[in-house]
Length: 131
Image 1: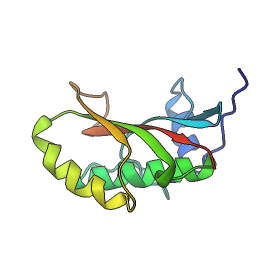
Image 2: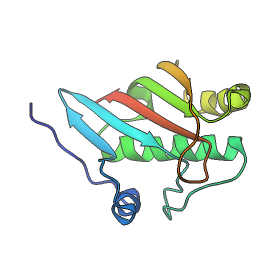
Image 3: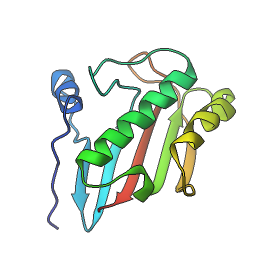
Image 4: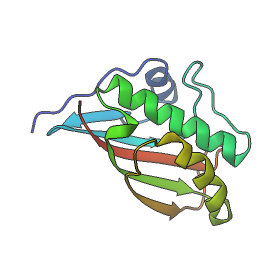
């Protein structure tokens, strides 16, 4: 199978600096697969460690950024997974999450997890169709 790893401005630098063995996005078979994204500022690459609402918004902006640079968009998302360290944040995450979709929601799974080796509370991964 032929696949491509699109260049993602700013965020690729974060992945390289941390020496993480992953690609932010992989394009294959007309789809874009986006790795789990923590709450990263798309302008600076800094980790957002604020409230769960601030972290959710940052994750969604990072997801939109990666999809855009991969030839897709949030509107073309077909499946998302939200990984969160606290199920008590579910409603607060949903309130922010739903503001990023104007014409219906993609399929989604909410997965509780223990923690990450960095100070953030959620990651969001996605599968979307290419434009």
